Each structure stands twice: as structure tokens, then as C-alpha cells.
Image 1: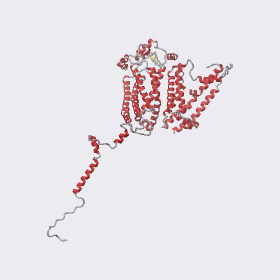
Image 2: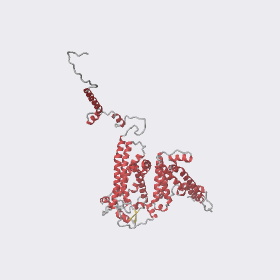
Image 3: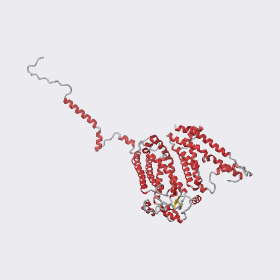
Image 4: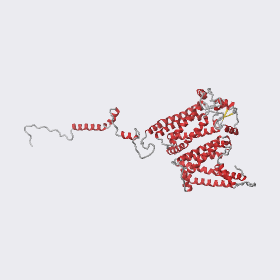
Length: 213
Length: 375
């Protein structure tokens, strides 16, 4: 009964909030007024935008030592989460049956194990560093902690329900997924969609000024 | 018919019907003997075997000896391909089951409950160990950011694995009365998946602990004196120590040795696709379960003294600083070293912290390996 509710009305409600919320946030960013650049452009903004999207994927020279932890743990978490989200067998089945109508070959079990361990280790290390590092602690807000904890809980409940033997475990996982989807558009988690926009904006501005940044 | 004149008439006896009593008694005796034979005869081989009168083969013994493969599976054939696929009944499995149910579960429970009881008794008798001199207000940096991150990373994994492992070991006795069979089934299934999934991360946490905490954890004579004075836990017996005391060093080496043992045995159990048979798996389980219970019991002491048991201890791992009086009462030799280095009474300034952290990354603050005073 509870599972039917979570996978039925609550799921659809959360999906609508997620999609509409994300689109609303992106459109809102798009509609933000920008200052008119009166200077004569020294180059096109497009190459700068594309270059910055790529080059911001690793640390700039001079910052590598201090950012190694973030770089490694960040990639561990994000790559692991991506594999879990897109290629975990239960997710592929869910996407096929409930969203797209078609699926793809899921990841083998060993890859699932590796990906989940990377993701769990990565998010734990990143969150602990946020708590322990004096500067990180000062610049962190409630949203940062809530997003990290909620994401961790969603991953954890998903892995605990992996045996697929009990509806209650699946219902708990789906409930946390719905919570995350509702919270997503109004939180820092939006960086999943805004990071290329942000990088492209900065890169285009620098490209027009002829600055390689 | 007329009477014969030469023979006197014999008075006629009353006529008897049926089997004569003598015959009947004889038949009864025969039947009882037959019954006794039927009842007793099957017991003769057992009696003979019991008395050692001779080898009376059990007709089923040969069959079961073959099935149980006491002599090994040399002549067993099967079309199934796999590890020990030709083994019908594994002797090791029964020995493992007996160890688990008769040794690991009860002895482990007594050890854990005994440790909790001891800590409760210690708390009642000794109470929280206070800072005798109160707080000085002067801070001393003790653990770096990386040390604290790795410590809590390992701690979170350890607690999760310990709880899920204990549910798998004792849930049947403890949780079924509370959650019922269905509730326990779901809980156990979740714990099994969680335990198997988080387990492979733990070896990396242990490795990081070794890298970040190895320096300064070698035993020396100061630790011997520390042990003789029971670590100063008893009133009126102050014990000197350097950066780490004897108890902390003992705990560190427990983490290393138990961590390695539990990691290797856990990986053998978690990834059963590398040709390890039941014998290896059973041995790995014995090591894993036995070490885990001792590890958890020891960790209770560590958690107690690091939180409620001692004033001022927790902040060394939460914020990285300790009060100078705490350092004086529990790590006096290290405090002397820090005073000499001008590191006592520093302000917990974030930028200064980062600067120090970046300068001596992965080494720890005032690491005793760089100074003459060690302990």
C-alpha cells in the first residue's frame, strides 16, 4: 500500500516538481539581466566558453596541491554516482518501465560494487572535510550539509534495498528519492545542471576580452 | 450294547475341550521366546558394538561414508563444474556451524556485555575524569585536518559495519522478539547488503589510518611506566606520556592488526568468485567473526574514554585543539615539546590553521617523530 503510494502519486508529484523546478531555475538564470559590454570584442565568446567548460574540470596551476583532496574525492563521488544512477540494473529497469520505455545493458555486479564504493567513500570524505576544514566549515551553509546528507541517505537506502526481497526497503528508498527530487531544484544540487552554464558564461566573457582563463 | 463280563467298568472322566493346558503353556513359552527374539535380536549388533565384541557393520555406514566423503572426493564424479561441486556434504560446514553457534555467539555476547558492564562500573566508581586544573583557555593544536577526516571516515565505516555485523550475528535472538520475523527479515537483508557493500571501503580507511597515525606510535619505556600506573586512570597515579600514551598506542596497533585481519577475511567472504572453497570461507568467517567481536569490544573502551569518560578528550578529534591543561595532565612530555616550539596558546584562526595544515600536511601537528622527546 505504502509502496504503491510512493511509486505512484508521490513519484509523479516529485517528478513534476523536479522537472518544472529545474526548468524554472534555468530559465530564471537565462533571464538574469547582464551588463552591456561596451568594449570592442577581441575574440569570439564561443571558443572561450567551450574551453573553460573543459579546463575547469581540473585544478589550475598553482592550486593543485591544496585541491588534490577535492579533485580525487570529487571525481570518486561523481563518477561513482553517475554509474550507479545510469547503469545500476534496478535503475535501468525502472527507467525502461517507468520513464523512457527502453533500456540499455546494465553494469555488471563487480562494476556496481566498485562504483558504489567510490561514491560512498567520495561523499563521506567530502562531507567530513567540509566539517573539519576550518575554511570549508565557515563557508558551508545548511544547504550544503542537507544536500550531502540527503544524497548519502538516498544512496544508502538504495544499496540496502539491493536484495529486492522486501517491499518496505524499496519503499524507503523511493521515499528518499522523492524527497531528493523535490529538494533538488531549490538547493545547491542544481550545480548538476548549472555547472556548464556557469563555466560557459565565465569563459565567454573572458574569450570576448581575449583572456585565456 | 452290553457290558463286558470280564472287564470292570471304568468310570468315565469329564470330557475336556480345546488345547490341553500343558500344550498351551508350551505354546505360550514359545511365543514369548519368539517375541523376545524379535525384540532383542536387532539390538545385538549395537550391544556388541557397545561392548566391543566385534565389528558389526552398519548397513548404512558405507553409503554415508561415501556421501560424506571422509576419505576425500577422489572418485566422485559430476557434470557440474565449480568449486567443490563434487562434494555432497562438507565436514567443515558442520564444524563451522558448531563454532558459530557454540563459541562465537555466546562467547562474543559475554565479551561485549562484559565490556559494557565493566565500563558502566568504571563510570559509577570513577566518574568522568575531570581536568584537575580546570581549563587554562590556552589551546594546543593536536590533530591535523587530514588526520581528523581519516579518523572519522574510518570511525563511520567501523560503526556501520559493526552494527550491521552484530545484527547478522545476534539479530535472530535480539531483534525477532522486537520486530517480528518479517521485520527482522527485512532488517537482516538490508544489513547484509550494506555490510557487503561498505566492507571493501574499510581496508582503504585502515591503510589511511596507518599512513597518518603511524609516526609516534612505537612503544618505549615511557609506555611501560604508563602501563604500570594504569594510565593514570586511577586516582593519585599520574602517568607521564608523550604525543601518544600506551593505551593510545595499543589501540592503534589493534586497529592495524585487527583491521588487516578483518579486511582480508572480509574480502575473502565478500568476493567468493576466486575459487576459494568452503574450507577457506569457513576459516575466513571464523577469523572475521572472532576478530570483529574483540575489535568491537575494544572500540567500546576507545569510544568511552574519548567521549564521556574524559573531559577535554573529544575536542582533539572534533576541532583539532586541546586545552593546555588537558595536555599537561595526560601528555605532559608532548606539551613540553609544544611549549618549546611556541605552539601553546595559539588562536584557532582559520587562516593560520590552513597555513599550518598546508605546511605540514599528512604529518600532524607537533609530530613526535621530529623531536627528541617521544612517548
